[in-house]
Image (tube, rainbow over all chains, first blue to last red; front, top):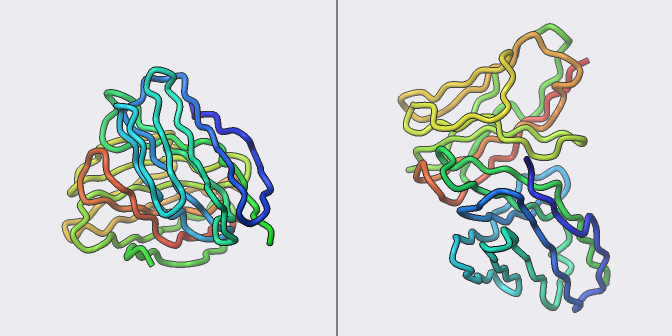
Length: 112
Length: 113
């Protein structure tokens, strides 16, 4: 069962902030975040492991609440280059290998 | 550029045919993953290989098969193709076989007519 991402789409002005949520019904070991521009490969942003840690990548950061099985991605002071579709990929506890189940994606459009 | 290469970039074929997609992982990476991305299904995990052995399996159809060779490159074989198999197929690689960053290749766009 794939994780649920919200919102499905968001439009921002340059400099504004946004939050993207990723929720799972399964106990998670890790959450991976990727950004994909149309027709291109997904680009890795960060991995969060269980433990509620928060990580950052430029002005993009994320948190993982293992009790709620939820991760949030924070886009701070958004730039035009932040436009794209953001995917969370979740890894279940006890899953074999490094199998990721991806959410449906959140489309982000940053306007000047 | 992630360092993962995929060939061909585009593939157009007819229903019922068989095709082979090829992937070369980043230097030093032992794991290879295959994903299918279509408009209505999103990014779907197909299969993972680690150092030549199958490590994890997703909802891969029986008409699809994959393998990883001793030089660590991988091939995804799709047979008895149907219209619904039209999609973007991504290969990704990672250093280890467990929780690790997956680096995606540019993808192969398959169109089945």
